[in-house]
Length: 271
Image (cartoon, rainbow, N blue to C red):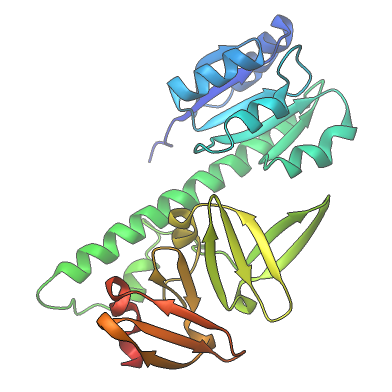
């Protein structure tokens, strides 16, 4: 099966650097270079216009640098970003701005290949989750349940990747990165463009949308009970019915969260 084309934008203020990167990327059949940009403002315009899957983004540029480009697009759906820099001191800062990867100039071909492999995996996992979500909806719409187990369908090699859902989240805070085990998350609520991940020890803040969070978590364990709330059903202790078909959930740690009537089906196993 032919690989899906990865629509790619190259951003660098040095013409020779742009030309060199383009020549290296020509060796990858699935990389489709849709545009180039020579400064930060141009990059922002073309990211919005072209909506690429992948952006190679130079950090050191006059005017708006690579980090400024990311900041300007922070409230929009970002493509996968690989920063390019001549100085390795920018590496940590690159990851703090949610870059997928970074490359040191002059770019090493083997290192570039590893970065492209990583991008392919990220895109494949996203596609697999989308396919699984559509499949689940299709099966739920059937009048008669299928004879084959849903778990068997979802593990079929042609539509699913081996890793479907997150097992850990990398939380960046004040220059440090914490690894949070998904199984320790008790409930999640939205605060604008951020998610508050509540564990027994601490509340972690992650920049993410509720829509994407739904896709990243195992729906057998994490249920949406409100437009801004997801709960780990293993952490539920009891339910209290309130007015209008709503419920208050008491978790094992004593915390209380509210479930709206629109998401009552998510609690069906408890009713």
